[in-house]
Structure formats: C-alpha cells, structure tokens
Length: 238
Image (cartoon, rainbow, N blue to C red; front, top):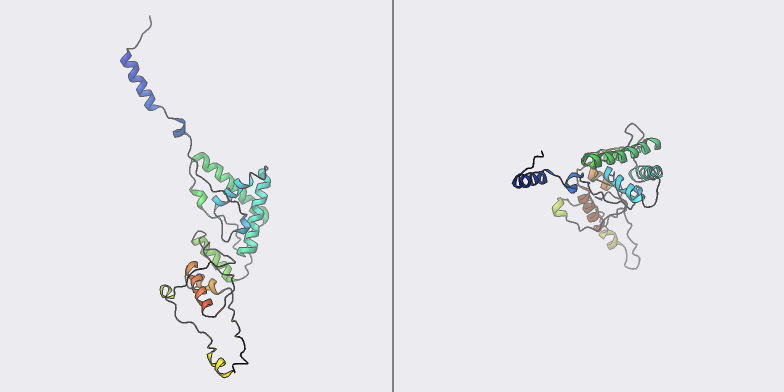
C-alpha cells in the first residue's frame, strides 16, 4: 500500500526545495577581471604588480601557445625592466623565471578560492645584497616598495603647468645675464649658454625632499621656464 502526500504538502515541499536550491551563477566562484597588458614589461617605468604579470601572460596566450615559452618571454621582459629602466640589482634569470611561474600558479589558486588580494602585491625580483650603481637607485627601490609602485621612472616629462605658490618654492639662484648684455655692443651680442642640470635633480626632490613625483615635475618645469634647462630624463608619476 503506497502512501501519497496531499497536494498542499507537495506544494509546500516544492517551494521549500526551490528556496534551498542554488543556481549555477551563484555557485560558481566569481573571477576578478584582469586587465590585458599589451605592452611588454620592458616598457614599464615602475615595479609591476602581480596582476599585471598575469595580464601580460593572458595577452601572450594569443601569440604563444606554449605556457613554458610565455614564462620565458615574461622573465626576459622583467629582466630588461630591472636592468635598463630601473637599474636595480637583480636576481638570476633562472630565479626570475621561477618567480614568474609562482605568480601564474598563484593566479590559478586565487581563481579556485575566489580571493584575488594577493595579486595586488608587487612583483619583486630585486637582489638587495647585490651591487647597486648608486645609493639613489637603492633609495628609489625602497620608495617604490613603500608606496606599492606608485613612484616610477620615465625618460619623458608630462607638460604640466607650474604652480610655485602651491609648492612654496623660493626663488632659485639664477645667472643674471643682463649685465653682460649691457656691456656688450648691440652688434656683438653672444648667445647665452644653457646651463644643464643633472638628471638627478628630480630624483633628489622625490627621495630627499619627500615631494611627490608630480610636484617634482612641476618644480623642474618651473626651473626650465626660468632659463635653467633640465634634461628630459626625470622621475614622473606613471
């Protein structure tokens, strides 16, 4: 003899089961969108984040099918960035490739757990105990680590309007060429010589004076308008 439930009981149980069921969209782990990095790591002007390493790897997937080859390309780009742009002491190429592999494995792990906070950390292949060209490079490295890569290096400056009142900049020592023009005759005027400052001017403003890179560029721009030419190799906020 079979036992049948009433229609009201069946409807009540059906509604209860529907509430307890989880749809596929709610059950699958949410994946964080990783921006595709089309440019090579060698073109960067600051220490990249681990998320940018993953973004560059995703872009290389369209060109290079082998994951091992993509890891080699990423390690080459990182080595060029550290050697040519940042001038930081770097670990060996084998160690760089191993760090690249760990970053990609970390991304796979984050996708499984649905937590992507570790990708916000800096990708660091610096060898602190290695040889440094000067103390300024080492100081810049610590600045980038403290500010999570928000301080960078670039070979070009952005056209920014100078605002000396905002920075509180006092008048700089400028050569007064007016007397030379008065003494020289109008027919024999010699062109003024440009006075070049070293490219470390903006570096000292950032590292020693605790100025932001944006304000340091403004100061250099003001000095340039006053007649003191500064080479375009300066620190900017990239």
